[in-house]
Image (tube, rainbow, N blue to C red; front, side):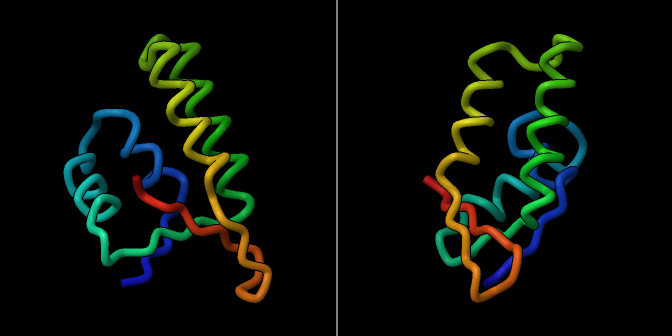
Length: 87
């Protein structure tokens, strides 16, 4: 299934909060393709750095979150969306 996530949904995968279990299950389901907008990448980086500054994420969690965005695939034929590949 193709799923389009906004930034707040994607952040839940890296930061424990209400809804984290649902988002984690969706991302890890091998039949799902997760999509975010190109703008969502920038918003995500801003959000995880804010949580790092507020000591809600440690340096390892921050690096894992940022590294995950390096692995996204840009699909120009679909517009500005990027696909996140789950590990």
